[in-house]
Length: 152
Ligand SMILES: [Zn+2]
Image 1 (tube, helix red, strand yellow):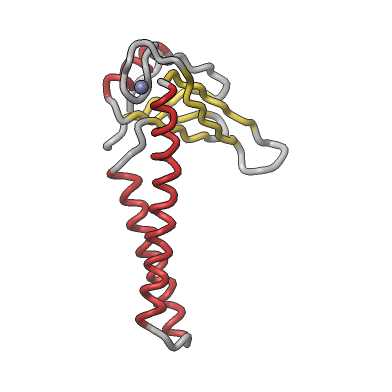
Image 2: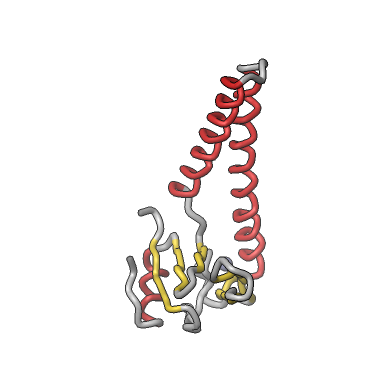
């Protein structure tokens, strides 16, 4: 694993170390806000909002990194599709499967980016719990200690 995960129950108010989540500056002047939804069904959804201490300037780069990566994954998936369509101009049965293959390969490359270049900080919301993912081992350990949890 290239990131360190701490799981807390849904509803547990997380306590963060009092330093920037990105650059570890000891006096962060802002918060990096992440939102997620728990539950797949409308009505059963709970909104989760996490506010992690961060410098104002770091918040900008954290957001940029997050959106940039979604863009890169979409770009790879799109490139895979375009390349496959270009290689098989006749849109017959085989061509369509080929295009799907291209999309799949593109999405796969995108997934590799997710695994090998994790975000500095991210959350995954489940129906009963929230996973907090940290790139920094020491931040994850301190976060776990503050919340009586363990690093996975
Ligand atoms: Zn910072």
